[in-house]
Length: 359
Ligand SMILES: Cc1cc2nc3c(=O)[nH]c(=O)nc-3n(C[C@H](O)[C@H](O)[C@H](O)COP(=O)(O)O)c2cc1C
Image 1: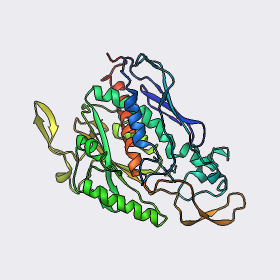
Image 2: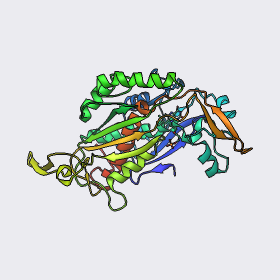
Image 3: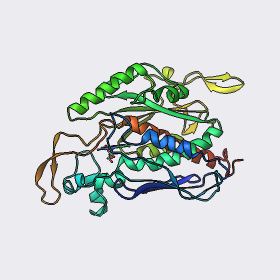
Image 4: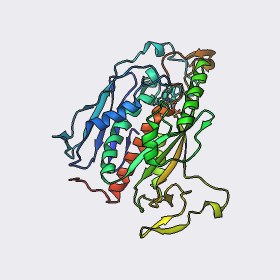
């Protein structure tokens, strides 16, 4: 379904070529000072047309807050937010109505909704709909930051180019905005840009891996068995179109190398290493949450591909035109942070570590 969460709940609405994309957030702690510039800042990180490696669709993605904020603070009532669609070009899609793009949502959406789905621009399955998650995530981030919890992500890998070392959340946040692929590793970033440009010039696309870290998460968060912290975060991450894998920590070959030995640091139980990625038995360990997200290469490519005409059931060839991201990774980074923030806040509220009122 199109809603998520128990105490910090969100419901997403809108389509790529409809009127708008929006979200209703129910349960945002009352009293939160809502900084709309910060929400706009997150939308700007995700919006199209921001660099030569992103789609050329031109949307201002200007935040509109419709309800739930009074005199700059959350009232406790639902907060409805949206961005208008200003630059949809549906004609590109009408020609392809019966020709599903390989790798995209066209075929499965038509099967599921009996052909009544809005197929223009991928409808609700478009990357554009992640603007809704970003608006909700920006609110959640503001609550989390007030409790000392910082979330940051960056491009760990694009195509065959990988970063050379590990980065903390503050390094990721500081360094990744200095280049258009959003990698904390400046030298890898330059090579990543070249990799995307090469694929684009060949009518192709590339995928990659996003790495995300959340620091300051207290130990003891998560609701096993079926709502483990890692499972809930993975569920939200898999709602992001193009995400094909999520891995917490990094599993080593042997137990002796994999176990994170317990130590005492500043009078508290801590771990010497963090191979578990901050989660044991679905419960936060107090170590930074650390996970990677595998993003597939963009399916809409300018090469001839085989498809089937769904009306005639005849084999046809398809060349996808229109405006597409040659690599989704740079724009997915703020969305990964947002998905993480909404789940963390919801779980912290369920654990009564964050109340319904913030003063
Ligand atoms: C920010 C963002 C931008 C995207 N841009 C495109 C795009 O330009 N062209 C495209 O074919 N897919 C794009 N996608 C991915 C598709 O929406 C996605 O592949 C499709 O809905 C099928 O879902 P799946 O890949 O999760 O199976 C984008 C995804 C995100 C998150």
